[in-house]
Amino acid sequence: MEIISKPMGGNIDEMAEKVFMESIRILGGLKKLVEYRNLTWLPSLAEAAYVVVLKNEAAKTYSEIARMLGITEQTAKNIATADEEKVKNYIMEGGEKANEHIAGGIAKLAYRTLKQRGELDKIELKKEEVEALGIDWAVHVLAAIKGMDFPAEKEALMERLKGMSIMGKDAREILQAIEYPVKNPAELLHKIKERLHD
Image 1 (spheres, helix red, strand yellow):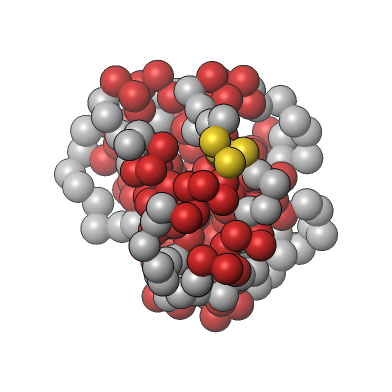
Image 2: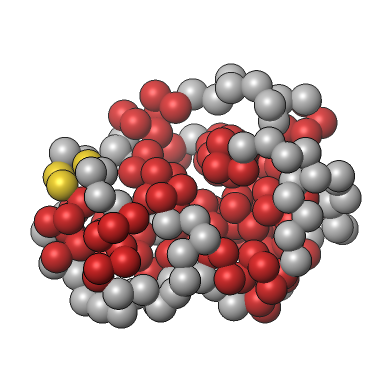
């Protein structure tokens, strides 16, 4: 089911962050993700949140979204066309595994929920929960690299993340320690996460 909405012209980063946080809430909260060792879902959820918001709020094409986020056009399409009801049935009710983009379905469900409640323009979601577990950095990194071309080299990433601190560490130190080129935003988040736990 395609979500249809006129471009709102709002702050895309803020909207994507709200969809991301609502997605986490739908999954049972951060504590549940930690309990089930599903923190690896976070980069995919962040990416899916951006795709859903860019498609529905900024009326971007799959090609434009792919370029902006450093993903393939097919990935953007898979996320945007995922059947959120099938994914909901799989995640929430233990149904048969959906042949859908799981993060895309969750992000679409979160987006639809926020739209229906009229909360997409209100900041009611609890950022403290994300900050308490130290994963808010993923949203900030994605916002900083928005529109960047991938694969990306060290110099370009250093420029985008200049002055940023990730869990108390200088982003430049972390970027010095990872391998290049970085293929896409999800890989960047994964590599940063690995360095944070070294």
